[in-house]
Each structure stands twice: as structure tokens, then as C-alpha cells.
Amino acid sequence: MENFVFRNPTKLIFGRGQIARIGQEIPTGARIMMTYGGGSIFKNGIYDQVKAAIKGFQVVEFGGIEANPEYETLLRGVQVAREQKIDYLLAVGGGSVIDGTKFIAAAIHYPGASLWDILVHQENNRGIETVPFGTVLTLPATGSEMNSGAVISRRELKEKIAFSLPNNYPQFSVLDPTACFSLPKRQLENGILDTFVHVMEQYLTYPVSGMIQDRFSEGILQTLIEIGPQILQRSTPDYDLMANFMLSATFGLNGLIAIGVPEDWATHIIGHELTALHGLDHGVTLAIIFPALIDEMRGEKREKMLQYGERVWGITTGSESERLDAVVKATRDFFESLGVKTHLSDYGIGEETIRTITDRFAQRGTRLGEHGTIQAEVIGRILRKAL
Ligand code: NZQ
Ligand code: ZN
Image 1 (spheres, helix red, strand yellow):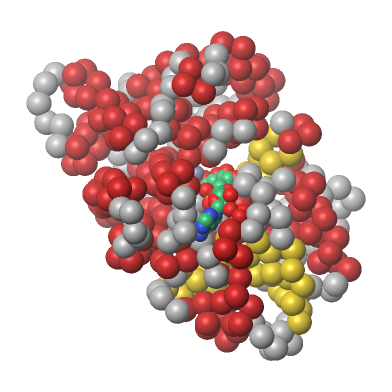
Image 2 (cartoon, protein in one colour):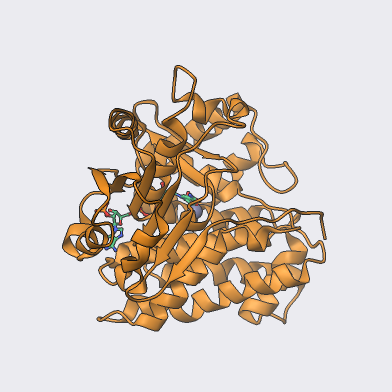
């Protein structure tokens, strides 16, 4: 096992009715900016619950943070927060609202002239002062409710860039499964896929005797395989299924399963290009890239792929190469069984986009993957396997 330091300061507040506790978690006298997305919180009653919970505080609202939060929108949020002398942020929504709020938290006191530098000159971010924030999660997927990362899009430049800061964790996050009951099927699918692939980015690399971490990861994968289809099939949401889904997503990317093990993240970084260029949902990009990536990288990932196949899918017979084929197929079939197509051609994407993406990675000189071997040429092969 590799050396590690693990700290996660986010307080999780879990369960039915827990939104009512938010007022106790925010410092008395705080000037709050409540952030939200396109309006789902008005339809499902979450807005009213949150407003009731923070009655008595001075609250400014900033809505309209879109899926794949847009830099230009967030600049307006920063301006409002500065004008209103906001000293606490409260994000109510999915990963996009939480990520956008993390950007605003980092930007309010950012000393540089261009806030875009927070994303493109991350080497200067050390020590920047962030504004504290809490979250109310309405979509289990990203783990953003218990990590310090965020992904920001800038449509004008067709860019989608991740950043993280050690002091940008939510102070608290409320996980009330009933807040997710209004999720449409498409977002449930996205959330299951995102969680599954988060675990894979931290698990499916090479063995380092992280026995506990492997079992944690396999436990989350097995839970998703068990409950994912049930969640999607139900006509009325089930509290316990949603509760387990929420925990899977949060623990899939809160740092726990990454302790002492190598990480990959190539699927995510390549997938972000598909969102930036074609606007595909984040979860869909992962469903396209991941099966193709493990197929292409089966040499480097051989041992963990065989372990995953045996422990998660019960694949124990056949030659090694047949077992690796079966692992790729089981994974792709699972994604497709959720109702998500896994080929670029299913979305009308072809060779032109592949060339654009490989050119972009070649220009950046990117080396992805746990061994840093996934360069532009390999990315091209992965994308062609995904056609
Ligand atoms: O905007 P509203 O009206 O709220 O609607 C949203 C949005 O349209 C809707 N929604 C959310 N909760 C709902 C609901 N609709 C009905 N009922 C509810 N309870 O769902 C739509 C999608 O929301 P979004 O927040 O975009 O989804 P998600 O949570 O999947 O977040 C995706 C973003 O997170 C980034 C992705 O790249 C993408 O930009 N990621 C962030 C990560 C992180 N911070 O650690 C890691 C991830 O890998 C990911 O990259
Ligand atoms: Zn993700």
C-alpha cells in the first residue's frame, strides 16, 4: 500500500427531515448567498424547506446555475456575492450547483485579475482564501457534496476544466433521500454511471495490496449493480434504495477509497472533451469511454480487471483473454441495461471529433492514466474502439 494522508472535514447530515437543521450549522449573523440551478427545487418543495430552515438569516438568492456550470454565469454570481458582502454560501442542487458554488467560494476573494486563472493557472491557487459553504444535495452522482473538487465549463472556448483546493470542502452536506424522489430517469441513470466510474477510476488500476480499499470499492460496485436497475424500474421512489444510492455516490468520491492506491481518471478527462464539444451529459460520456478504455488498456490493467471480473461479475472460467473480453462485455452490458447507449455513433459522433480531441491532447502534451501512458495516440485508439 502507498503512503497517504487522509482528511475529510465535511459533516454529513443524513436522512429524512434533516434540511430543517441547516440553520444550526451556519454561523449566527452570516450573510448567506443561496445558490441553485434551473428551478427543480421550486417544483419538489426543497426550496421551501431550505428557506424555512434559514429563516432569520440575511439571504440573497442566486439561481440559474446550469448543468455543466458555465463560467460566465458564475462570474455573475461572484459579482453579486462581492456586492452583497456575502460570507457564507449555501448550494442547493446537484453536482453542477455545488461545483459552481465551489468556484464562487474560491473566486470571491481571489486576488488575481482574471478568475479564469483559478482553472488554468492552478499552480497559483495555493493558499487562496475561500468562503465557507454548505450543501443540500438533490442528485446522487458526483460526490461533490463531500470532496473539494469542481468542474467548470466555458462554452465560448469549448473547455471543461476540473480544479480542486484543499480548503474548498463543504462544511456540511445534507443528504435527504426524499430530496431525490423527483429525479427524472435520465438523471438517475447519469448518477449511477457516474458513481460506478468514479469507483473504477480509483480501483481498476494495478494491485498495491490495498485489500480494504478494494473491498470498499467492490462493495460500492456490487451495491450499484443490485440497486441501480431497481431504482430505475420503480414507478414510485423507494426511500431505502435512494438512501443506499446516495451513500454509494458520496463514498464513491470522498477520498476514502482512494487512500493509498493509484488512480486513473483518464475516462473522466477524455469524457469532459465530449461534453465540451457536443454537450453530452457527464454520465453518458463515461458510459461511452470506459468500456473502450479498459478494452484498450487491458495489458496494464490486467490483474485488477481479472479481480473485478471474478469478485463483481463472477467471471472465473475461460482463458485469460476470454475472461478479459467477458469483463469488458459485462461492464458494457450493465451500462446498456441502464438504458444508456455506449457508442459514439449512437450520438452521431464520428471521426472528425476523434481527430479534434486527439489534436487537443497532443497540443497539451497530456499523459493520462495510472502509469501516464495514455497519450494522444492511445486516446485516439480508445475513441475508435468506442465508435
Ligand atoms: O438545475 P435544476 O433545475 O436543479 O435541474 C437539474 C439539472 O437539470 C436536475 N436535478 C437535480 N436535482 C434534481 C433535479 N431534477 C429533479 N429533481 C431533483 N431532485 O438534474 C439536472 C442535472 O444536474 P447536475 O447538477 O448537472 O447533475 P450532476 O449532479 O450529475 O452534476 C454534473 C456535473 O458535475 C461534474 C460534471 O462534470 C458535471 O459538470 N462532476 C463533478 C465532480 C466533482 N465535483 O467531484 C466529479 C464528477 O466526476 C463530475 O465531473
Ligand atoms: Zn464523474
